[in-house]
Structure formats: C-alpha cells, structure tokens
Image (cartoon, rainbow, N blue to C red; front, side, top):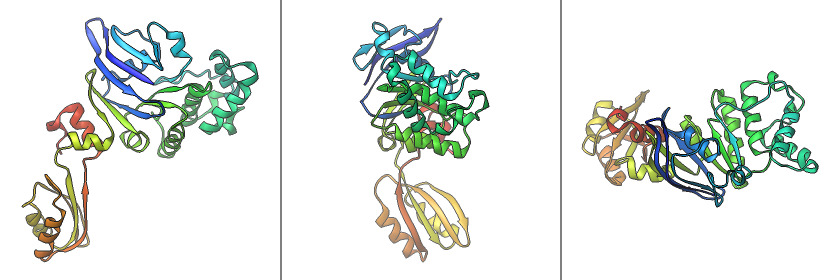
Length: 310
C-alpha cells in the first residue's frame, strides 16, 4: 500500500525528515511514533499530497505522490492534527459535503454518510451542529470525513489528542474496527493506545527512522536482556539478596508481606530462579518472563538508553 524510499524534506537548511524508507502492506494498522518535532506530521503530509518532498519517493498503491497526486488523493483519507471541520454545518450535511468533494456519486452519498457514521458512532448526532459537539465527538467527525469515501489508506495524525479515558476506549475500538477494510497509518503520543491497536510500529527520531517492527520484535532487538518478574511472600531484603545473583533487581511493589520484584535476566532462567527462591525459604507466589514495555522501548530509541534508564 505504501512504499517510501529516501524520503527527505528540508525547511530552509533544517531537515525535518532524512532518508526515510519503509513499506506498509495492505490492511495493516501501523503506529507512527516519535517525539514532538521528529517529523511524523511532515511525513503524513507528504503521503497526503499536502507537502512536496525535497527528495526521495513516496508511492501509494502504485502511484507516486509527486507525479500522480490526484490518483493518490482518490485513495487516501487524511485526518490532520487539527480536524478540518465547518462548525456551522450539521454532522450529516458536512459528511455529505465531504463525500461529494471526494467524488462520491450523488446516488451513493447518503449510503456512504450512513456507513461512516455507523463506523464512528455518530448516528445519534447526525443532525447536531458541529459547533455543539464535545471534543471527543469532533475527533470522531474528523475520522468520519477521512473515511466517508471508502479510501484504501487512512492517514491519522493524533486522532486521540485531548480525549478523556472513556473517549480513548471508544477511539481504540474505532481504530480496531478499521483493520482489514482500510490500511491505517496512525501517528500518536499515546503509547498504550498504540500498543493495543497497531499491528506494527515505526519509530522516528530526529527525522530518521530509528526502528520498525512489532512490539515483540522491537523488544527482542532493542529491549536488552528482558526480565523475570517474581512475587514472593517473605522478607524484602532476603528476596533482593537471592535475586541479585541473577541480575539487577528492582522492587516493584510491597504490601502485606508480599514483595513483587523484577530481575534482569540474560536468558531463560525461570527454573533456576524459582529453585533459588524456594531454597532460601521464601514462598513463591508468581514468576513470569517478560519483555520491556513500549514506553521504555520508545524512550530508549528516541532519547538513548542512558536517559531512558530509571
């Protein structure tokens, strides 16, 4: 669906993105992560035919964004970081207007609007002025205008920005529901939502691609040795002393005589750790093998391991 190679964009002498290269397959939901100013929005705007690259290529479903922008625009739906809404219009009329702009035939407009409203949970506010909507509903209208013409590719720039926890749950369900029907590239700072929504991640740092892959692949490659999480009943000092033989130990929680600890491990050492805990007279309640969480991986890849360390 998307092929990018050598993509570069300069603003004056400053490079917003440099030599980006990645591919996204049809039907994937891919998270695009990076700190503020890393180049996420610039990349999405180039893919959306809003900006011209300085050099390199970006191809959407076989069409070059520079040579064939009209062909690309027919295949994409774009939600910028500020949704392009007309506050004086009702939701339904606005979506019908957008559908006509996107080339949907008059006979199909009503059906496409109903379909977009159904996917985004907007049926109940079809007749409401956009100016009367909460921030969460405005974000939904932004997503609906991006998909009302059934695009093959959705480019979503921070769709969860400013949403409360309940609205985030609803947005997460919305994005999951788009999988398969559309290819989705979504930029976000909300790491838990990306973790629970996306098939694969692209992480950008200072305009360059720092890493790409599934969360598990990134953890294996960049997350260091991983860890073993242990929950025991007994003295905290004794538990720490036993586990320090296997690696650096962190105490995660302690309550009512139960201590939860995390020990770094270079390999699968659960049997040995379990035996050592029991031999020390501690009651072993739980032992799990884990990998580094997305938040730590993100900080490691965008700021460096030293800054990411607790």
